[in-house]
Image 1 (tube, one colour):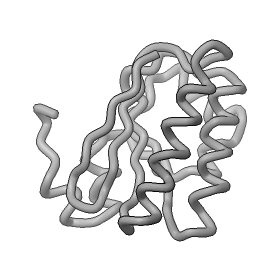
Image 2 (cartoon, one colour):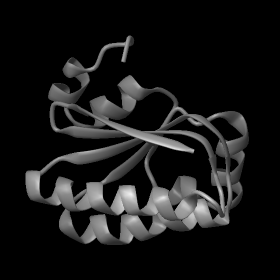
Image 3 (cartoon, rainbow, N blue to C red):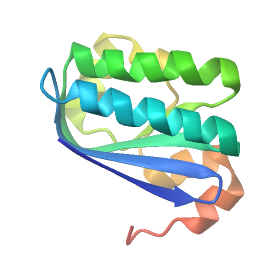
Length: 125
C-alpha cells in the first residue's frame, strides 16, 4: 500500500493505493491520525481517495474508524471518495457508508468541503 497527500484549499486529500489489510493498516492509521492532528490545527477537512484501493479489510476499516473518532469531536469530517466496486461493497455491508460521507467522484467530495477546495482541484491531479 502507498499513501500520498495533497492540499486543495481547505481540504487535505489522502490517496491510498493497493490493499489496506493486516500488513498495511497500521501505517494507514498512523498517516490518517497524523493528518487529523494537522487538520485540527489548520481548520482543514480530510478527503480519502480510495480510487486505487482494490481491497480493504476489517483492520483497514478500523483504521478509518480510529481516525474518525479522533476527528469528529474536533469538527473535522473525513469524507471518502472514488471507491472501487469491491471497496464500496465492503463499506455497504459494514454500514461504513452510514458513518462516513461518501462520494462517487473527487470533485463532488471537495465541493462538499468548500468551493475553495473544489476550485483548487484539477483532474490532472
